[in-house]
Length: 500
Ligand code: ZN
Image (cartoon, rainbow, N blue to C red; front, side, top):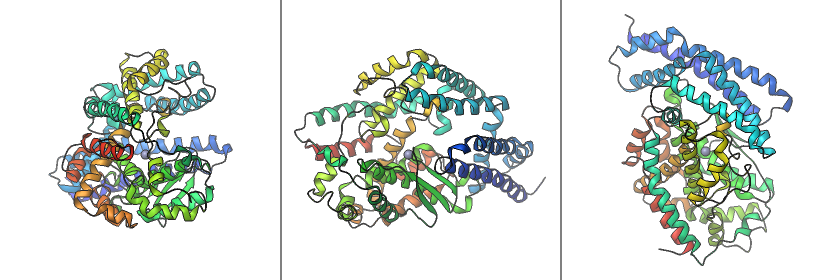
């Protein structure tokens, strides 16, 4: 029998090749969504399919399977044990889905998104319905291939491992009731934010210069990253020293680029500070979408929409955009960027009603996957569930069930991670406040290192060594719940809108 050290070195080599292929794919994807000319679409599709095919071949290679089998027979501990466990998870996942299903999933994902984009543009749900039907059927087939659990749970686990619909529902239940109560209190308030502030034109160059100054101060490292423009903002790690974030600008909606850039910088800082020594192994990957989203939400909301931060940042914003906010004080500004109002579009929702959008999708996608809801009845169910949740009824499907790309691409079980991540961001923030009692004073002085360092030590540098729930418990001392978020929301909106 081979020495485990030799086998571990072999395993790292094999996983390294897979990681290289993934990172090359990531670069192709980044380029496609930033600078690739329209004429590149076809060739890029082929290039990506070839690399993805190679990656799959390496992952299902019997030699890798056997190597893992040998190592699983040893008494490994620490990182070695975690490495074998993580590799096994990916390998099993890849081996369980037959090649023809992988190909059909890829085809549906590409075609579904194209058909969806057309259908949304022309507000034509009927044109999209057959694609959605195919997507649902394929995802059921995929879930059956992956495991014998409830299909929705199996799919949700792809994005948030160890989680389940039951757990999500349990975490969401108090949130649903409390958000309603808070919305009632907001509606009953005689204070109103000055929303016109948010429409004041700020030149794009000024928005960009200010955002870059802020995220650099947060800790996003431009020597190991960059910021570019795109249509749908995202963050992408190409390699340990190369993490790219993107944003979009509109001169009459400065808050969109500003908070969008803060958000992506949170994703980017996580990716920049994953354990560098594990850059070519699954241990160096982010641990779950929920944990990823906790990092973006923390910088976007807990830091970026907070009063302490703006004590320091507001004069700087004014300096970048002379004359725009001369008549505005920081209180008025902070109230405007934290305004609450139920709206139609998820990505434009405020911090409070955002969760209602996630609950709507969580409810409907479970019913789609279980078969309780037929695709043809989705628009009606969307309207009905919106009303139940207290969201406005969409005037058409474009602003209703056609607004998000996820389902068209075959992503079911993804939406809950947005709320799980947001709840976690606040739970981390509370823990951080206990570890750094003068946190807010630091923020008001433009000192972000105490926040950044704590996140690196407790989240980023953990990579995928711990399961997500374990990481949460170690970092915050408790399993994930809505408690911290609700304490935060009551205090924050109570102060802004003047209720107890
Ligand atoms: Zn995000």
